[in-house]
Length: 455
Figure 1 (cartoon, rainbow, N blue to C red):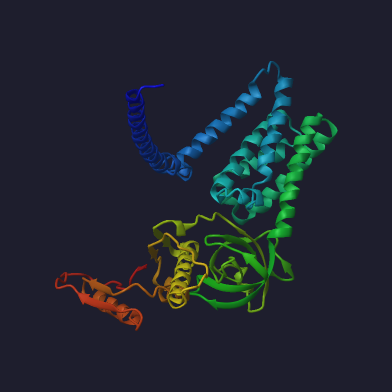
Figure 2: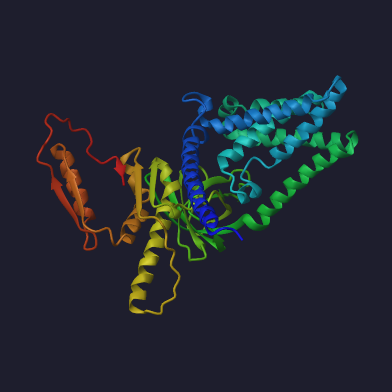
């Protein structure tokens, strides 16, 4: 039998060892969290360059592209000793890259299912297509002309030059090149090559069937209140409830007589929605700049919706939410603010009822958000009418914001404008005290004292 003193020694040493490991684990977790934040700030989200065309690509994305290119180079050159082998290898590798490219273009249901951002989706589509085109050109000249044209037309300066014709030209060249590739695979290629090519076509067909069956929705325009001349907000009623979430977007196909414009669906962010706890609704609102499609919008007009798509970033899980928009960017953030405010109002009403009915078992969200800040920079003063109703609704849903004070310092015109704004927004439910600072700057030139920020 072990001596009692030895047992005591083992127990004490075990306690010390456990405590030491706990401290090391705590320090390690903090270091990992700090390193993760540093990685996110300086590598994952930081642009590759501060200026120029490469500023749209993050450093992490640039590294992935570099590795992707290196893997393609290795796949082409590994154990290759003659030109014939290189041509065959180029055909196979190009087909694999085209499998990735097939899922590009507009948002694909597969990438949406895996919550891949639209920015990453297009980045993969562009570079996989360019590398695949070069590899296919290396293989042979059967579809070389079309592939060269696709490669050149995909570059940024040619896209800008083509304007709205880019999509049409790209589709025509794509069909020509892929048709030649399929014909080439059917006549000459080996079985593995045929599997890759026709498997790609099968995946492409399946993705479009998913869109047709699950993503297409008919809708009727229920209101076109207009705008300031540059933008238009319109509401639609879908034929059946659609599951939505804040920050999602739809491809909207506007009416063109006498048929729908199937090739010109515009990607519009969902501005506002009135959803139940199941997040299903038929009432949707959109905000867009005026164009030839909106000119045909009338009450009871029929349109097509393809969606929703997008990332559900669950902002209600954060304690402080800071939303910033400029101009038309309000369409991308306002739905988040309205969604969080609705959930808070729901919880407040349930708690008020529960205080009267002790056995109430109604569902509450219990969001983590304690502070929501929305800042909207106006590019011109008339933009504030775009979403005036939604901003007013957002203010009305915040019943517990307490006393508010507005202190202003400026010249006479500026102070008078702020005073008028405070008085217009003071109601029985929202008490705002106006205070003018004792100091008044001298020599200010009156230009335009209308506020240029909506918050």
